[in-house]
Image 1: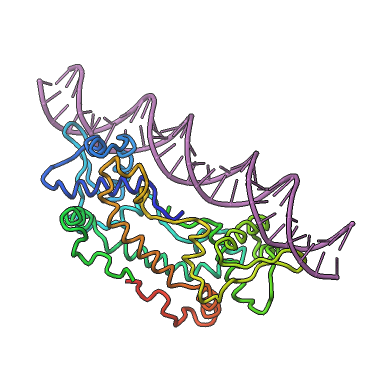
Image 2: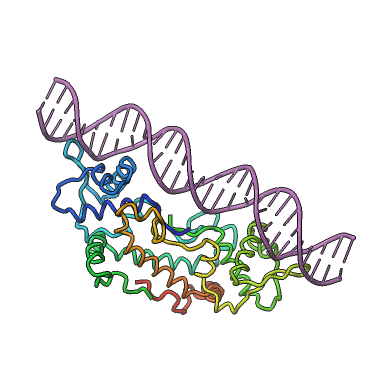
Length: 153
Length: 153
DNA sequence: CTAAACACGGACTGAAGAAGTCGGATATCC
DNA sequence: GGATATCCGACTTCTTCAGTCCGTGTTTAG
């Protein structure tokens, strides 16, 4: 139904958490999970995936944990979602798939592919830092002044 | 994984088909299904749903079938998807849901809600007629001149 | 050295939704 | 009345998501 998975949600939550606590060297998966009521083991797997994708740095052993691999401003929500949920496409039969060549039904998919690119572009323009900022501003005065999604029309 | 269902695809395919054959009074679900290799009974249910939503007009009996209730230019892809897949939301926990109030994890959802609105806006700006046109143009000279999704950035 | 705390990673189970099927009822035209 | 349609609900099957379990490897504290 055109919604991203909870794993992606959890991943965004965790990264936002890390962006909001830049002073800490490393945060364990359990700490973040406990803060939000997320299953710890599940979040751990998500963070592992994000580490493999190069978005996080991990440190094993006691007092270990995760930290952002780059500045929060350099990590886009697109990368996070792509890392966790894999490449997403609006259309069920995307280019490269096998089933698509059989039927001529793909005539519809071309315009939808543009929609897909639009979504990707929007997500790429939103960084983890934007999420953290948005949180503060939203609580402060309703809707932030940041031109996050200024192309709402 | 952020993709719409096959039902929605089928629905769009069928509406595009109807838009491309405006001369015919009514087309049966079976005819459309056979043209694209879609399960007939499944497509029938989809068209019934679109009829209930007021996007199609149906006529039972022999030589019966479906026809567009309005001009193809007045039917947006948003309406079709919304009718078939229901209200879609990027975030797993949208406003109005119960589970959202429990955890403070919703801090992330606010900016994503804007993304959601952006997607909805794009889909609302694309009509069934656009799909039919796009099909012709795409085959002719690659990418149509229509400013369909001009806000790709 | 040892044990606790942490990251890693595969395998597994349950639940939910999607995709498609089946059977029957009703309406219309010939 | 029979053939062709829509209409509609219930049902099975399949896939994927969400979450858990368990074991391994690594680092640090004591």
